[in-house]
Length: 95
Image (cartoon, rainbow, N blue to C red; front, side, top):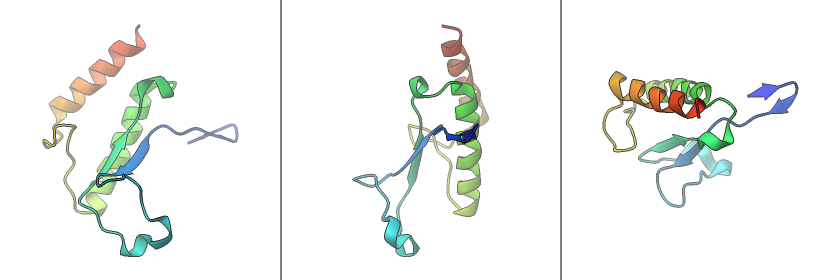
């Protein structure tokens, strides 16, 4: 994301397989069993917004890659889990 010409990173993407990197020079042949999207609340100005942006990207990727969208426990990411995460993030912003 860019604000006033400054790039702001809201979340990270990693390969689920060790060491977590991607072969940038040969992505056409790249295969993996999964990717992880994550962020640290202390690294972003608005954790709720960062989560929403990350979730939108995750949803789009899951559709494009015909993949499952799962939570940290590898369970299907359901609306109640999303609401729980959003609630936790809202509580953090009130501290």
